[in-house]
Length: 478
Image (cartoon, rainbow, N blue to C red):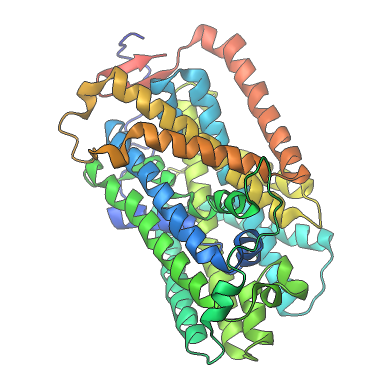
């Protein structure tokens, strides 16, 4: 590596780049809103994987993810531009790992928009008894994606405020629902312990299906890593990113655990997953069929599905766009990815994301798309986290001086970087055991696109222009 003084990305705030205007609270809501979306749709997947012990699986996953979030809290203040996994793995290992780590995390992020719009379309069909065909559901999904695409080209303040409104409405409604279920008169602790170890997943290599299911629950947590994608637009001290990163994990982990504890006591798992409830919207169906409620399930469904999922899709859409923009500024992608519109929103990254999202929808199987999306997110996310933990260990070894005076560094054996690395490698391995054919097909297509781009950069672009990253030691080439 060698220091250079040119080819730097455009300063944030100028018309040629991103606009520095985000308050810390909105960066927190981007991360939290990205995470907190799957409660009312994939609840059937959660309970199918980990039974009535789902609440414990979420509590344990919170403990497993929090140390990883602390690693992000340590290294995110070192770099002042968007990029996250792209930067960390390039600096920690090399530019090839940087490229594929960012491509893997984007596999998780890019899975969200098609998954969300399919969930919304499915909910509309179910709520109004429309019995829409899978093809019609796909068409509605494409229309919603186009609406999100046009929204994402607007001013960042409009996007984050809309997302924050949707997020807090979702949180409030979810907590109210938990209390109503707990005090409904049907709640029993016997239901919680009755199928505590239930899992529809088969054990593999002697590993119980419940453990594999818990590993797959990493999906409802990914989103805190969107914070480093927003730092270039933040107008707050960069050390404060820890509040957004760890705050989002703790907030969502606590709500997940409380809510699913309340749901588990409503009825035995087999009753909760009976009939069409196994295909999604388990809690909404239970409130209607078991409790006989008519009004509140509709209110909860519309807020949690429409507003909650809108918060998620906006958060991941913004983050993916900024990762692609960062790849353009650092010469991992052509410079065309850095062009912005009058609202200072990247143009080509938005178009690229729209095309890939539509492709993902078209690849999905009608009978398994819900699990395919979920498993693909889990796998991409876990692999990217595992690589980043390895890079964090190497970065700490190679550049110990970068961490001097860093208030976000957590000392002590419990939060040792090596243990975090082992945790994420283990979770990534367990996630591979839960992948279905549909997930592997989508992943292969997506990874193939990445390999083609990487080969073009390797054989053509990088021979002419180096990768440039701003580090605590100044701008460096890789």
